[in-house]
Every structure is written in structure tokens, then in C-alpha cells.
Length: 375
Ligand SMILES: [Zn+2]
View 1 (cartoon, protein in one colour):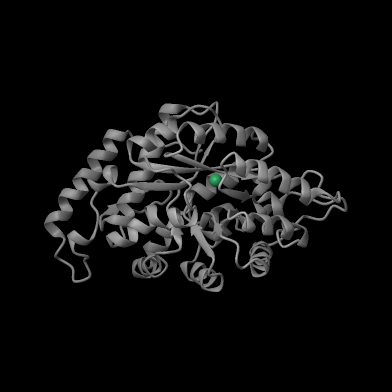
View 2 (cartoon, rainbow, N blue to C red):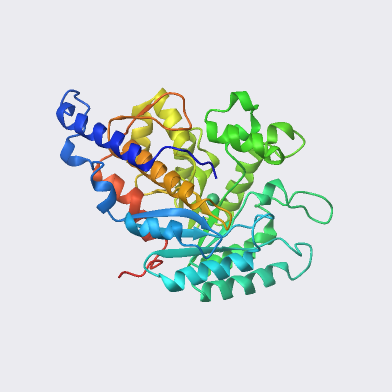
């Protein structure tokens, strides 16, 4: 979790100033979207929204409390990360949050590759998933350890298109649940640090050299990871599928468009990758804006906020407000938004209201059917 020190108040004041400037200048440019067709910063708090990608590893409710205050519902995602609590514990915590506040928070389960080489690995996973679905899980997350870390008994990396997974994916589909996939890494992961496009990748890979593939040329390439994911999807075209982190195609809206064209059942989430689209906006704003408009039914707003036992809660709250407000300014206004991951400010996309409604709420409601109970 990267924490930024901007105070909430300062963010609000900057944003308020942007809004005031906008009202007086919105007719200067032919391409300007009419003010009535876009949301303003004032709409942020009141509009009903969904953040489709957070991770709460504790009984603490800071993310949930702030989400409720700002009209967000949440999808809380389990992940099989070795240094995190075991998946079983994660699911127990998430199921409790979900039972306590079913209108606010839905959750995903995950599975491990423990015992991969045994005959009954898939049966045991299916048994666990069915119990997790009974507890309320609406989806299953697979993580980058598949393809980048986990090995079979012969020492080969286990790739996601391995036929052994197909029985599990079929079960998920037959149960009407959604598969969430974090495949590989951003393309920056295969580049030297000083060639990376955004600061969050630079900081992450600097502190996680084990995942910085530029340092591990013996491991599968970026293209290998994408190909394995696409092979798997080609075999499982009818599974409801969310490719998180912009399908690891965050570096090119053209590539993300090709992916969405090829796999009609797939959507993508924006978790921790808004900055990559902002980087592309700086090169060609219209192209990025057109991408969001053309694929308005296939994209989910998401952040990747995380809360663990040791998280500083004041820092977390400040960080959440900064990200939510910067993202809202970027998607809804034409103002120059200063974001921590880029040196230069980025001009907002001023997406039409109906596109923002889909990004921020209705796409998630359609994919995660009845995940949140209406109050
Ligand atoms: Zn995540």
C-alpha cells in the first residue's frame, strides 16, 4: 500500500477550485461535453457507486465505513498470497463482513495449489469452493502465483491454461459464479526500472525484486503470460470473467480493445491501473476517451485498496479519498488532474454520465448478480 500525505481537506479545496473554474469555461472548446451531460465533483459523494476490487484482511472496518459514507459498495477479494493470512482465514473474515453488512460488501474466495500433483487436487478445490459459495462468495480470484511462482513436482511453472484447471473453472461457471483473473503483471514488470511508465510500478518492483521479471529472464515472458490466459479463456469462453488490473494490458487501450473483442464474456477492472490509462491520455486523450465510451459495458471501476492488521488507518483514509477523488475528477471533468504516479498533470476525460454510471455501478451489478442486498 503506497500512502500519500495529501490532506483530505486540501484535496477537497483543489477539487472545488477546479469545479468553479469549469462552470465558467465549459463552452470554450467545440469538443467540450455539455456540463449537463457530465457529473461534477459535487456528485461524487451522493452518487451510488461500486468499488469492485478491495482487500480487507482484518475485522477492522475502516474501508467499509468510508465506503458507506461516500456511497460506495465493495467487492472484497481473497488472494492466495504466501505472506498473507491463509485463504481459509481470509474467507472467514470476509464472510463475516458480508453477513454483517450484506448491502455494503460482497466477497470473492480463492484456492491454493497445495497438493497440485495429487489426483484429487481439483476435487478438493471444488469441495472448498462449494462451501465458500454457501457462505456467500460470489466469485473466485486466481492470482499471478499461477504462471509466476507455483511449480509442479517436476519443477515446471504451473500455467493457467493447464487442463487440470478446466474442471474447476467449469464448476465455477455451473454455479453461476465469476472468475477473477490476475494474470502476469503490468508490462513494466519486464522493463528496467528506469523505463517504467508510472511511479507505482517503479516503487512496487523496486521493493519486490522477486516479481520484477526484467531481473528473471529465465522465467516466462510477458507474452507467455498473456498467451496462457488467452488460451485458457479460449477453452472457457462462456465463464463470466473479469480480467483484473486491466487484463495486464494496461499499457495499451488498443490491446485491451482487442482482448475485449476476442472474448465477449470478459470484462476488465481498473484496479491500480488508472494511472496507466492516464499515461496514455497524456499521449492521446481522444483515443483513451473513445476506448472508455466504446467499451462502456465492459469496464469496472476498482481501486485495490487494502486493509491489514498493521495498516495505519488515518493514512489509509487519506489515501482512499485521494484516489477516489482524483479518479472521479479524471473520469468526469476536463480539468488538469495532478496524480501521484505521473510527473505531469493529466486532462480529465469528461465521460458522459451514462458511461460513468456503467463504470461505477451497473456493470458490476450485472456481472455480480445479486451480490449486494438492497437496503
Ligand atoms: Zn488486488
